[in-house]
Image (tube, rainbow over all chains, first blue to last red; front, side):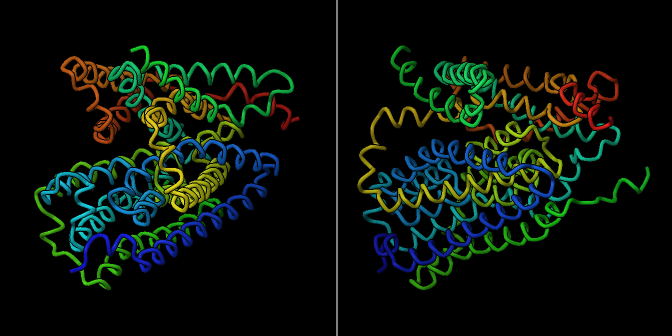
Length: 238
Length: 259
């Protein structure tokens, strides 16, 4: 009988994952080149484009390292290849971990470690399929209705102004939901957020000084890192 | 109502995204769903429908399916055409959206304009490539790096990524609603009921020792609160409490152009 161990280290799985990631990388490169070409046509300078890319690359490092922590945790129960695939595409760490641990319990394994030692290939198949279909609901809106959603908040036409109010509404709702939850539900969470905010404001003030304009590219990444580091202090105090 | 409003003229890049970006997304989607079936088919391990969808798994799906709807409804209008790529590579709230907001802030462009869309797309594409590169290196070196990422200090810092991120980007989020030639004045009034409701519910949850549950429910909360803020904003806008005015920061540039 095929076991989970036969599947998680399969060369075929590795080939399929590499092919998928190659496609996604190529898709990203095409998107980047198309956007860059149009940006130049719209009068955005090469220097501004370079700054966007530099800032995005720097900013992406820390959240990506957090995803690496997830990779390390998930690889222990589902193998490196499948975990690498799931966390590189639409997967979310919380969803993948929950599927793995809930299924371990549903299949009467004492833990995910127990599951990786004893599960059958079909049981691993259940995990693979659930992880692949579970996060697709967003696409049921994006594919058929994405264009409509985007044009409904198009700010390029001034019109009567409602589209601009509506456009800002989504951003403000996101803030109005996340900020109270982060500030009220947990003291350390609140302190980490406030630290990040203060650092961002401080760096913003410094960046306005002559000769410090380059700092603008790193304000978000810097304040996020210092906010995260502050969690060590806050957890030690509280 | 005039039918003229329904005719939409798209920028060439936006039109490309809606055609080829969407096609590329569908191809990626089909591949993601097909991958396990192809692989399991080769090994003769495709489980039955009953094994995949049962009481234990439906409960988990029931949580995450509304989250997906909520993400699409709330993030697509913010990210514009970069959504197609962003949704494929995932990690929107903790990675792609902040990158897009940061890029808009750096260039002073407004979301949902042709300029805003190209700027966001450059940021999201660069971030996607970086994440795939980092995860690939990590997967290759996993046996060497595991001890570092299993350190308690690293795990503690990682668990506070979201609050740190919100602290660092809250100003950027506010700023991105105020760039471009026009700005929304008094937009915050439209979300006051949301702030009050979410604060009260979170406070209640914390008082009964369930504060942590709110972050897990955030997808549902956004889904429930979006209509509240849209309706409130619409009413406030009609009454003139929320206004769209000329951006004072852009006035000198506009005057210069006129000269």
